Image 1 (cartoon, helix red, strand yellow):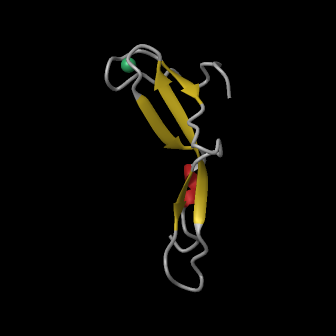
Image 2 (cartoon, helix red, strand yellow):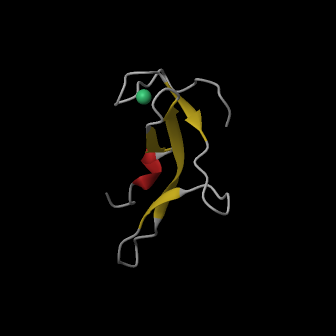
Length: 76
Ligand SMILES: [Zn+2]
């Protein structure tokens, strides 16, 4: 991901500046994920990648699931 301003002009919750996408890297430089698990034989874990937005003015960081529709269990 680079500095493409393709986030529909999401404003910083802190200072109101347009936020930009950035990579949110872990120590090993693997992409973080959000994952939901629950017990039960029909409950396969569901997960999504994570998008990171950062405010270029104040540094506020916002994380969002890249594909929130994938975080639904089959029976939900
Ligand atoms: Zn800001």
